[in-house]
Length: 355
Image (cartoon, rainbow, N blue to C red; front, side):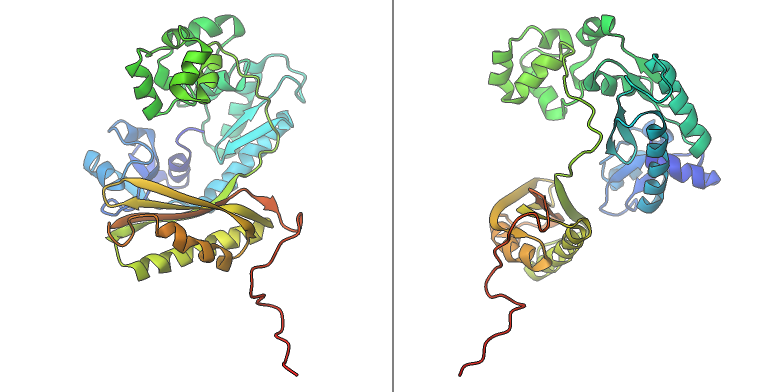
């Protein structure tokens, strides 16, 4: 979808159309940009940018709080449209998905024709525009989907793959982040053609296990199938403070609220987890994570709070001011799928009376 959150706000409020809209925190607050309209992007505003910086770039921008329930409502409509064409739908987020339409309900052999039909269906059903990428595997389709945004389609036929990737700037490769892009530039890689000069072993030497992935994608190789169901890997919650905090009692109180939120999500999804991760962002934007994998699985608020102090002690909390805290549980599994050793003392067991 094109600027999904911001586009929904413009759809629901005609006064916002054609104006720079930022979905996220307050302009003078400590939050970040969750999404922004294309009118706002012209000022250099991007997702994850501090709202204070976004305001400096565009003082006339209109800031609005996220309405996740509304976004999820429209997302369900969009995913239902996808399923009209194929069962092979792998949802990546509320506004993005891979579709394998090799076999489709309309017996249409042309992927580009189907992509245009889907985009028209989305617009007629929701009033929102979507962009599509069409190619022979997931990596290439994802890269193509960003080429003609907003409200466009890009097609990379198999015969054009190698030439297309040779010219593609390395920062446009799906899976190459800013840090990796800079590292690649240091070894002389700025395009796909540059990357293709390296052997698999050389790329693994420079980039570890990811080196094998980079070797394959610069040649257009991506054997990953479209998976109709994606397994959730973690459940978490985080918060950014209006003002930096240092007081340990306040920090523990916030962690208690976050653990309650995470525990509620675990219960709702009927899952538990084995790994707890604490995320701390200091006042200078330096971010650290501390993780621990436990023997007794994490289900409840009490389980999480039992482990958090040890992780917190391995940070600079109490010494450095903190602007963000986050808690996440991973290593998920379905409740009742394995026997669980309860932590002593057993809180629900009656204490036997002494004779």
